[in-house]
Image (cartoon, rainbow, N blue to C red; front, side):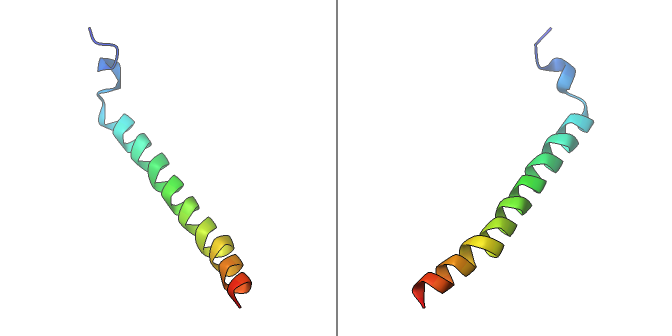
Length: 44
């Protein structure tokens, strides 16, 4: 029995995809809300 065989259920893939998706959204929002205005104000 493999150590990862207990995580073969599709629910685990759904959980991992959800976590990755939320992470990508949070990173994108952080860049748009903080990094872009910071760059705009420092370049002007």
